[in-house]
Length: 345
Image 1 (spheres, rainbow, N blue to C red):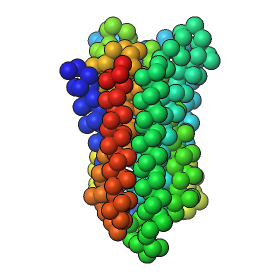
Image 2 (cartoon, rainbow, N blue to C red):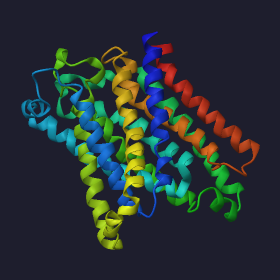
Image 3 (cartoon, rainbow, N blue to C red):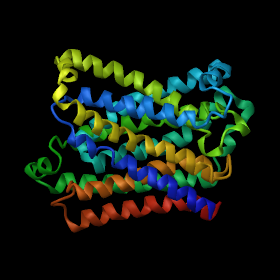
Image 4 (cartoon, one colour):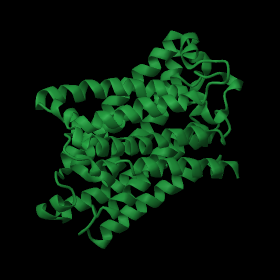
């Protein structure tokens, strides 16, 4: 029963994340780079900081914790956050060319598989004494494999969509639809986004141990990873502000109230996935199959809900019943992948 509760919490976070792009549509008179970094302030700095503070017991301090953390672990956690930030930037472009449903499906599917595998592999390279590869059990590998199969099926549905629709129909569903270009960007986004889980692996011991509530134990590391991602995004967005002469966006006081509100909402929905991941993992056995696969499960459920939004936003409008059937098949496989490890574990 505890595993079901954990999965439900992770699913709620996944639903929130998949909804985070909806408030962005309400932002007015700001360029992409301007609203992207403002929502990032909430998503990658403010809210993760508030979350990390929940892991700090009375009489202790968060920065005191970071100060006593081995510097290698601290900086590797931030470093992989910086790499993840590259994935975040290309992630947005993947949805520009593929739409919310297909873009998130391919990017997050790649992220799910590589993020789960890369963490233990890199930890084994730097800390062989931890035997991190022992986490990659048959059940874990099978769970990742089934997730990737589900993503591949959804990718086939996307290819069928690209082949069956006219250029006018594609543009009507996704303004800048370009399947080959979007696919390449989405795969890069997925690879780099997988670094988020690697950062969490390097920072898994950055907490106060038994003094920290298990529900909040991964949140200090989450803050360090998102901080690294914020640095990457800030450099790029400010470069775009300079290049496109959009610094004036921040001076448009007439839209500040509206835009900051929806940036805050988008950031809160985005951060909910990792807040939910931390809470959900506390219901799993530490180091067990479900715990190891939890990041993969989160990404798979993100894909499920992003495709639900894709249907709601009519991104699959005009596709044949066969294409929709393939899409639904891929979604079902992803849902199964969330429970399969527990059934065979």
